[in-house]
Image (cartoon, rainbow, N blue to C red; front, side, top):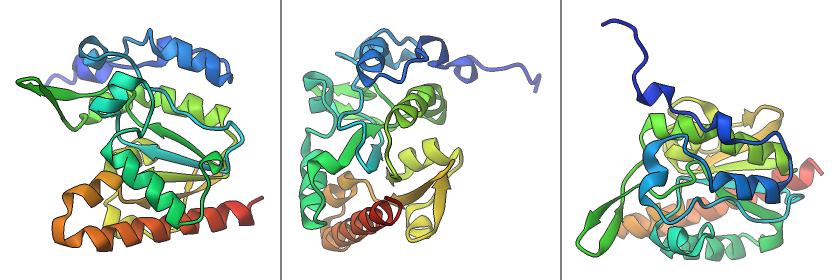
Length: 214
């Protein structure tokens, strides 16, 4: 092994991220990002949405097919699960800022369909400057990692969901929670009700932490 950096390790969005804390400026700039190859086969980058003073920041994995086409996060089937779980947890939409660790839709073509493909560690790390910029711009008091990819991006290391749930975690100066991605409910079959209940429980915990830190 030579120790020379691979092409993947050199990927980074850093040169494309403006210093501004304006969400509108960041949202415009992300469309020009070429920090990794994912931009080349997508419709657009999908930036986070919600009030900049939202007390809770929800971080998912990446946009899906519908998010890529419409340009908004969590508008597909997993988004439907998330919004219903938030309602069950007693959390209003204006209490959350929703985003993803990766801003472009990674997929593989199957005929006319585009099927989700998990982002690599290099792609997650390359996109992390955008997530950092969002967290600087949004005044969320609690950060919730929805799924393993989001947790990997936020904490810089693998974070198994089952072992990480309920732990007192922090992202810099903010309390953080690791829980299931809503897509896990769609994939779980017999365990769907259990995973959904855990997600709602964790969202309620996030709201309690946000209120305690107000």
